[in-house]
Structure formats: structure tokens, C-alpha cells
Length: 546
Image (cartoon, helix red, strand yellow):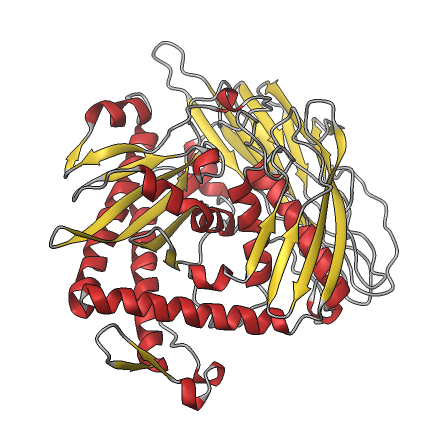
């Protein structure tokens, strides 16, 4: 059952508790809340269909997908509580995609280009227009992670130096045209020897079709004019709450910088520099001073950077703030073209979406901690601990691809200790259950445990990371893209740093970013970072658990 929560009247003064629609009808805050939750319910139901009809553990178990509704202009109208990096990037760049396509009833478009509003190539988006009486009224969309998008190494998360090495780049392309599947496009993307991949594409298209039907019901109920007016009222309401939130932050300029460990191509301690300029009820986020884009794949397209910034401020807003474009209007972004967080094509970006986005959150929170320290936690693990693995098909032997992110510790705050063994910030996925992983792939999990003592010391300790240990039962190509293996998650208010992560092959350190072929019987150990502590902490030594 989907639980709806109406917008709370406490955030609307009595004399502002009504909203005018196009036809002059007054809608009160409760009715607007019902409208907002009906939109969100469309996203939730799309997600339920996608989860239950997908084939791969990435989607059905880890829930590495997101669903959203957009206005006819491509502005974010609603989203489910899925993956922040997916939806923030779509919110930033969807208008550009909408304007580039000639939409017709029954169309669906597929895209994954990171420089056209995507994140990285494995995240494939399907967009469906919603027409009422042959008039374009809105869009529904979902984005899901595919473990095979055509990269040279299994799992499609290589230690790459150019975008084309990371797999197939899909510009906005019609996969459904006026209600008919475009078979050549589908055949190219859903390869015949990959049942999982074909099934996942069908699941995404089915979710869009369901979303389209549900949204058409809403549009017919409200009428197109009233629907558009309600979206405007919802965006105005979200903007008011966002501005009220920013206005509570003292005016000033707050600067912070942090570094990426390395790019896997020989560059290390790569700086992300940021200044927050708070002026009344608006904020400018300026990344001037950030390192130039690098050879390795930790570069970010600007849409991913926007997603991380939006997420950071969204965490400060009231729970009742609607997930719409209005909530982001007071936030302005500045990043020099060609820097790490606004990279130019054909920069490699596979890890920018997962690793650099996590560090951008750390930097934004680090700056906010100077302004409102009582509300900001220490750094969380600051990485998604990406593991891509598999083996190519040979003759009659089927190939396999797998991708996983691993939980870690969250940062502590004035409010209490950090959470242990959770996915944090830009990822909102689950772990892959051991039973599912061992059923689908030639792997055995030897150990899956809390990495006790890895959280930073302090009055409130940081959350602990985890230890996840894989034994390979067949030859396997493995790629690791991980961060915080050198630079530890920082504590706050004199709290201790969390332990850095450690990756080991047969209990020998192999660094943060690497690719190798494991033999049967080899053991890969991933020790994930702990979160930073809060208040009067000390450093603790790091060890590779065995």
C-alpha cells in the first residue's frame, strides 16, 4: 500500500492557504497536498512495476533505478524516493532532451549520454510523453543501471580514460515510435545472448507505459489547464520552502575543499574547491579553483554535479518539501567548463557519477558546517565502493556481468552517532542478498560483517563500515573503482576521522582503482570506510581484516 502524506499546513500562513488555478477555482493546501501525493504515487507505482518485472539483481534486488514525472516543458514535477544522483541529474537536464526530440503519441525515447543529462553509460533512461487529445501534457521517465552496456570489461565500469571505452553512448533515440517497438534499436541495445538485459529493457518500458496510463487518468480528472496551474502552484510552494530554508543560513561566503584519492591513471590528490555564497533566500555554489578534468574516469558532467548540490540542500529542507523543480530554483551553480566537475566530452565519467558525486556532497556539507554546525554531520564514507565483475561469452558458454556497490559508515553529528553499514548520500540502493548473488553468479560470499571500530572516535562516534569478502569459483575479470582509500572521511567539532577503506586480493592491498583477472579460489576483500566522528575524537589505526 502506498502511504500518502499531505503537505503540512504549518508551512502555509492562514492567509496564504489557498492557491488559484487557471480557471479561478481556489485550491487549499490540503487539496494541493493530495495532488502532490497523487503525482508521487505514479512514480511509486512505476517503481513497483520496474522492480517486480526486471530480471537483473541490480534492479530487482539492489533497486538501482529511479522514476519521475515531468511537465510538458521537461521540468521535474514529482519523483519517488529512489536514487538522488539519478533524479537530480534528470531534473537539471531534462528540458534539453525534451527540446531535442519531435514527440508523438506512443513514442518512447532511450538515452544514456552523460553529456546530455545522463550520469554514466550504465544508467539508461527511458522517457515517454503523455498526450491527451493529441496535445502533449507531460512526461514520465525511469532510469536503471545495466551491468552490460558494451564496455571492454565485464560490468561496464572499466578503469577508463575516454568515454567510448566505457560502452555504447546512446543519444536520445526512439525505441518506441507511435506505439510500435523500433526493433533495430531494441536489438542493438538488448543483445540476443543477454536475457537479463532484454528483460530489464522490457521492464523499463512497461513501467513507463504504466506511468503514462496513470498520469493520463490524473490529467483527465483535473483537465490540462488546471493540471498545469497546479504544477505551477506546487513549484511555487516548493520554492517558498526552499527559500525559507536558505534564509535560515547566515549570510556570508563559506569555502571548503577536499580531494579525490586518484583517478586510476596516475593523478592523485585531485582538488574539489567550492565556495557557498549565501545571500538572503538564495545561494550561489561556485566551484572555481577545482582541478581541471583528468585522464581517468572520475570526471563529472555538470548534471551530476548539480544532482549532488541539489541533494545536499534538499536534506536541509522540511520533509514536506515537494520533489519538484521549484525546490531547486534558489540554487545557482557555477563551475568552469573543463574542470573536474564540469567536464567536456569525451572525458571518461564512469566513476564521476558514483565517486566524485559523493565527494561533492562532502564539500558542500563541509562548507555548510561553517555556517550551521549544529545541523551538519561529519563526512560519511564518501564512496560507493564499486565492484564490477564477470566473464565474456565464449562459444556455447554464456557470459555474465555483475555490478555492486557496498555500504559503509555515516558521519556522526551533534544529534547522535553515525549509522553503521548503510548506503549514504548519493546512492540509495540496497545490498545484493547473498542468496541472490550466489544463485546468479559463480561467486561465494565468505564473509559479510560490520567492520567494527572503523567509525571515527568522538563524543558521538561515526558509523562503522563493512567487510565483504568474495571467493571466485570461476575465472573472473574484476574492476574496482573506490575512493577514501587514502584520504579518510573527516570528523567534525574535533571528532576523529573515519578509517579509510582497504581493498585486498588474497589479503594483499591492491589499491583503490584497479582491474585484474581472479582465479578460482582467489578471495577479494572489501573493507569500506567508516564515517567521521563528532566531538573530541582521536585517530585509530587501520588494518586489513582477515
